Amino acid sequence: MDKWSAIRFTGYTASALAGMGWLLHVAGFAVYDASAQTIDLYPVSVVWLAGIIGPVLASIVAPLAIYFGWGSKQ
Image (tube, rainbow, N blue to C red):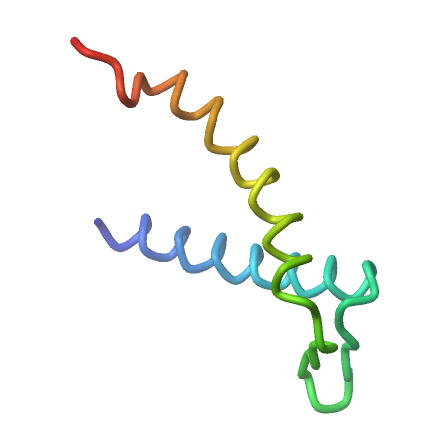
């Protein structure tokens, strides 16, 4: 990875983490403390969380698998 790719990767990763924190706050799963710059997560049921994340993650990965041909015999 060259220098500019590493810089872009770092920017995209930081942006994604900030976006995830904002989404957790908006959804009511976390509270953001602006003065301390921290995100405190509320207790969440792991079973409920897995039931939500599993199907969403599968829906994201499935089109990628079709597009890139993962699992196909070539």
